[in-house]
Length: 499
Ligand code: NAP
Image (cartoon, rainbow, N blue to C red; front, side, top):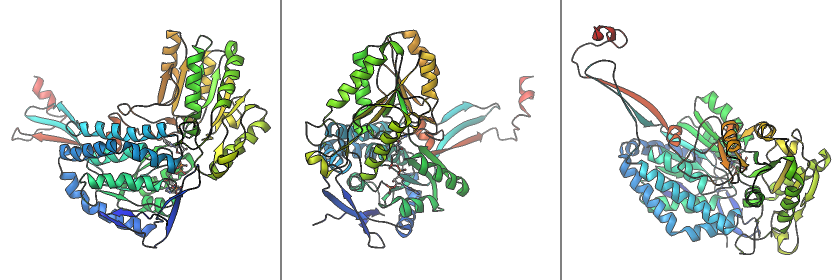
C-alpha cells in the first residue's frame, strides 16, 4: 500500500484541497517511496495565512528562545542522521556517505544559527550630536516563501529555514517534487522540537501551480529560491513586478585549473570527487578541467581511466561509487549533451552512454563521461549539464586558464591546483567566482562562510552560511534616540559644536 504524507499547515498534517497527490520514487530502483499532496494555490493561500497569523508572536519571541528551538532541531537531526541519510539515498539517489553529509550540513547549519541567537548583531555607532544614540537592528521580513531543489534535499532547505526562523520570519516552504517525503520528515522534527504552529508550513507539489502560487501571493514578502537559472530568472522578473525581495542561488559551470607544477595525484582525486560525486548533480560540481600543456595528455588519460573504473549502482550499497540521476529527463539531458559534444568535435574519452546493465536498468543511470579537446566556445564548455559529464580544456598558462574560468555565464565555484604560492595568490585575486579553492576540488563548502555565486549564478545575495545569510532574511532598521531634551538638527547643528 502506498504510504501517504501530508502538508503541514498551521501545525496540522492535511491533504491538498484538491485531494490530488504526487508520487515519489527511488531513482535507483523505481521503488515507490510515498505519495504527497499535489498542492495548488488554495493550499498555498492557507499556508500563507497560517504563517501571517503566526508572525506577530514569533517575531516578538526573543532570538535566544528561537535559537533554542533551532538547537533542539539540530540535535534531533543528528540523532536521526542514519535514518534520514538512508531515506535521502532512497529518495534522491546519492550514495549513503554523501547523503549522511547532506544531513550533517543541516546539523552544522542548525548549530551555527542557534549560536547566532545570542549574537544577531546590529550596529551601534556614535552619533554626530551630543546626547544622542545611534544604532541599527535587524527586523524580520514577515512571511517568506522558500522554494528548493532536489539535489540537496536537507542541506539547502536548512540553509534557508534556520536563518529565516532565527531572524523572526515565518515560512511557507515548497520543496522539489522529486524529494518531498524527505521534506515531510524534516518538518516533523521541527514540530517535535516545539516550533509553534504556523511558524513553518510545508506545501508539497509541482513548481506550477504550487511554487508559482507562492511567488504570486501578496502576503509573501520574499522568495528565497535555489534551482535552475531558467526558473530563477522567471521568478526574479515576477518578483520585481510584485515588489518582492528575491534571493537566487542558481546553477554553476565550475572549473578546476591544473597547472604544470601541480601535484597530479592530488588534482586527480579532487577532479574525480568533484566531477562525479553526487553523479555531478551539485551546483558546485566540476564540469570543466582547464589544464596547461605539459601535463595535459597525462592528466586526461588518468582522469578517463579513473572515471571508467567508477562503479554505478544503488547508493545504499557499499560497492557503489556513483548513484543514479534524479529522473529519466535528467538522463536524457546528459545524453543530449554527449551527442552535442561529439557533434561539436570534442573527443569522447570514456562513458557517453546510459547505464543499463543488470539492475541498473531499473534506475536512471549514466556512465561517468569525459570529453577532451573541448574548446571554450563549445556548448559543452559553457552550459550547465548537471550530470556526470566532464569537459577538459587546454590553456597555455595561468592567465589564460583564469580567463577561461571566468568566461562563462556562471560564477559559483573554482579551484586551482598548483605548488607555486605566488600563482595561488594570483588565482585568489583574479578568479571571479563566489567560492575559490586552492589545492582542493570545487565542492565542500562550510556553513560559517557565505555560499553563492557571481554572474548568472545568483543576484548578489548569499545564503548557505556566514553572517551575510542574515542579510538575505532581514531588513535593517536604523534607530536614533535623542535624549538631549531639545531640538537637535543633524548636519546643521554639528558645526556649532566644534567651536
Ligand atoms: P528547478 O527545476 O529550477 O526547480 C527548483 C524548484 O523550483 C523546485 O522546487 C521546482 O518544483 C520549483 N519550480 C519549478 N518551476 C517553478 C515555477 N514556475 N515557479 C515556482 N517554482 C518553480 O531546479 P532543480 O532541477 O530542482 O535543481 C537543479 C538546479 O539547482 C541546478 O541548476 C543547480 O545548479 C541548482 N542548484 C543551485 C544551488 C546553489 O546554491 N547555487 C544549490 C543546489 C542546486 P518542481 O520540483 O516541481 O519542478
